[in-house]
Length: 157
Image (cartoon, helix red, strand yellow):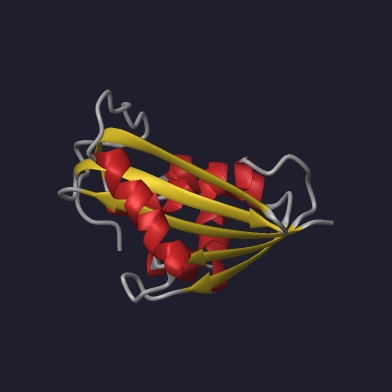
């Protein structure tokens, strides 16, 4: 089993607004950076999507993965096991069910631990993810976030 470290960040310019995610994957001497921007989305969707994309980028199952994120929404939902309760009730009255279901599918293929890091506090890899996310959000040809529901654009708490 490989030991992988993943740093993630999500961004939106307005909430909702244009958004993006940034991911830095580290494994030994290897490093991979991923990012993508969307025309209209929320910050929490991008935070969660960054984690999903990072996990989906792993080529083999059963990796030991440590994910560093500045998103309390994502870290607490998993570490405090809220997401598993949401799953039991079919994500009823929860936001981002499309992404949470996608997350759980890939999450269960690995051994994942989350670590919360304070955003904009000088952590080089977290700062790099922020840069990737904000650059992606302000880019050209932004994708459509198919799961974003414009009728329910309140903040995800």
